[in-house]
Structures are given as structure tokens and as C-alpha cells.
Length: 477
Image 1: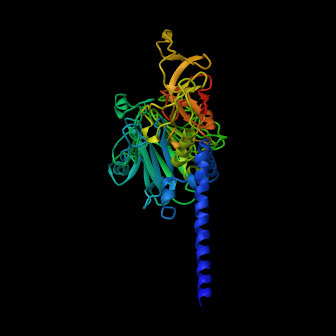
Image 2 (image 1 turned 180 degrees about the vertical axis):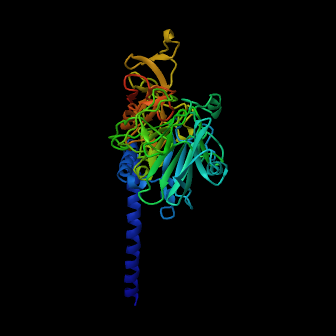
């Protein structure tokens, strides 16, 4: 019995020893590799990131899809306000935020035109006074008004955008002040955004088409176009018109991808027809109707409300867009490479995306004329330009010297490339193709001018391209 028992014990002993030995060797190998070669750490992070890039399908889900893949409600898309890098300066609150998601409503609230009345009739007066009845009133003169009655549409959902905080507005939008650090900066400006600026109608059934219309219904479910507003009777006998400062839309060519190109700005009417731009924003004479274009929004469409510009991203487009998690991985990859100031030799690091407006002592700074990245220093001021320009110690080029900030609003990215370029003069960093795309977009400014601007802060771009390639110096050890 003893030899048999001893043999069994030996088998069990070797079995457990093989397991323990395997675990120890694997642990010692991994620890040995990390301990003997410090430079392998950035390489490991980079290789990990490359793996993540290959698995973007996992990284590039909206938070709702990521956390509740089976319970997520149908999302039509999102509206993102240009000029805010992930959130409003004082934080997103209620219906006032930097981005707004449009989900399928539990019950359809869409409306569609039905009966047309002349204002002198009792039916017209009833339609205007009935708070349960949507209607649009077109004042042609003091003696003549046409009222179009709207009826419930069970196949669509309606979302309204405007400056008003009244309950019919789903997404409250205020004027964007370039580079503003607090909401108090925006309140001092007289707003040019309409209180009830526009409405978006989404089909409740696939493919969930979204269409945009100028003007929104007020608390009495009415839209009033006064005498001074541009309005007219269409060829089929219906009424149509434009709002005071208008709603402009631009659809990008080639979708919202790394191959995107700017489209042409158009104006959208109250009934959703497409027109060329008026001479000025509030001119009485409408532009020419563009027959072969529609008010259907597509991924990357821009909506300008004369004071704020919104980016429309479809749910499908968002599924291909880098997430905040992916941008955080890119930030960690750059920091893991331990870029250094070429003069002070101190290690630079992009701060956490939660501290996107606070200058950190390790913050990278850049000379915008050459792209050389340094740590902050006080030398090189040029008095002839009020000290705003500096001389780069690497190449002697003179120009603005600004801190670099990561672009945290993932919805503005056209690809998932690394953050290698920065907008000028604000210093917001993102991928090369993203900077190249936005630098080509002429965004409406005021009532009759256009200029390219950084999507993260709305600052007008400067320089030949509007952006610059960043030149980092790696660690000397």
C-alpha cells in the first residue's frame, strides 16, 4: 500500500508544482522585462494602443450603447454646439448643454400641415387661440393673414431648438463667444439667436430620417411670421417664409469622414425648402430655391442659428467616432513617450481632460510659426509686439507662443488619428485630418461674413493653413 500511496502523492505534488512554476515564471518574466528596460514602458503602451485602435468597434460606442447595449433606446443622433470642448464653461445643466441627444420618444409628438385658413374666418381665429392646436400664421398685411393648421403625425418625433427657456424648447442654445470661460461672458452680448429658432422632425421608423425646418412653435403652439419677415405663396398655393436672421445649413461632401470636403451653405425655410443665401442675414428678398437639394440632415451637417453653430451627428456616424475613452488612451500614449522641453529638459505632459482649462506646470507650449513644443519659459519676448510674440530657441522663428490643449469633444473628430496637429492661434490639439477639415470650413460670422474657426473654442483661425504640425522632442535617455 505504501508504494502506491507514495506514488499518488508524488503525482499530485508534481501536478501542483507545475502550475505554481508556470505562474511564477510568467510573473517573473513580465516583471523582469519591465525592470530591466525602462524604455519598454512607452512601447508597451503604444502597442496596447495599437491593439485598441484595431478594436475601435469596442472603443467607439456612445456611452448609452456601451453601458446598456440591449436596453439602449433608439438614438436618432446628436447636436453638438461648436466652440465648447466637451461641456459648457460652467457645466451642462438641464436643457442648456454643449451637446443634445435626440432619442425616440415614448409617444410620437410630430406634426404636419393640414388645413389653410384666411385669418378673417372663425376657423382661423379658432386655430390661433386653441392652445392644443399647432398653427403657423403668415401676416401678409394688416388686413390679411393666412393661418396654416397643423395636425398630429404619429410617424414622427419633433425636437425644438432656440434661445428660449420655455417648455416647448428641448435644447436651449445661447450665443457662442469665442474662447469664453464662463456663461457670464455670453450674457453680456445681445443675442441674435431666435427664441424659437428651428425644429427637427425625425422619422420614428428606419432609416430614422431627420429633417430641419426654420422656426419653432411657442408655448401656445403657434409660429408667427410678421409683416417684415420674408414670406410668399408657393406654386401649389401653400405658404412659406423665412425667419428674421434665418437658419443656415451646410452638408459636407463625402460625409463626415477623413475624406470630407466643405459643402455649400443654404437657407432652410419654415416649410423645409432649400434656398441660396440672402444678400445679408435679414434681407427681405429670399434667395433662389434649390430644387435638387432637401432639408434632410446627414452625418456632419452644420446648422447655423446666427450666433451659434451646431454639428449634427447621426447615431451611425457616432458609432464610428472616437470616444472619450479612446482620446484618453491617446493622451496617455503621448505622456508615456515622455516628451521633453528641448531647452529645460523637463518632462512635458498633457493634463487630465477634466482639467482642460487649467494650465499645468508640465503643460506643453508651442511656437505657432514653427511647431516646436517646449515647456513654459519667460525668455524670448519681443517688445515691439507688446510681448505677445516669442523667438523660438530652436529655430529663431518669431511668433505666438501658446499652451497646448487636447480637443476633448470627440464628436468633432473626422478620424481616430493621433493628436499630432494644433489649431492656430488657440492651441487645441487633435488629428491631422481633423485640423485640415475644419480649417476649410467657412463658418458664418455676424450677418454677412464667414471665416474658419476652431471647433473646440470658436476662435477664428490664423496663419496660412490655420493649423500647424507639432514637433516634440523625445527623452534623451
